Amino acid sequence: MTGTRTEHLTSALGAVTRVARDDLPIMYLDVAFDVEAIQAGWPAFESRFTSLRGRKMMAVVFPEQGIYRLATAMRDEDDPDALGLDMGALPGGAYLRLALVGEAPRVYRDIGPAFDALHGLGEYDASRPSIELYRRHGEVDCLMPVLG
Image (cartoon, rainbow, N blue to C red):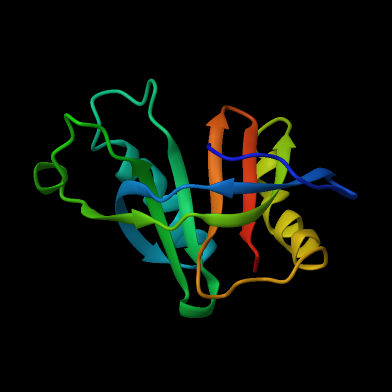
């Protein structure tokens, strides 16, 4: 993640920081924005790669359109066509970030409440997606786009 932390806020789930992100080229697979499709989608998406080591895995979420985009940052050696994935860009800009840390599956159940908390702390920018950035097992950064 790129950017600088310029503001510190808090929520019941942890510290919130304001970060600036650069645009990021991604490969992705869209699934419906419902629990069953998301749970089935991750194994199908991850199985396309020979290894997940060193991959930046994320969900790019367009709640208003009902789109949940399973995504990974592009690498030079990646061939989206051979993997059966679409290519695009994750838009940069200002985001509020809440880092979740805990045991699976509990940490994943906290993602929805984390975004609810973020919505109460900043002016949401609906023109850009929210991001679930999977840092490592049991660590998820929830990023909500904000204006300014």
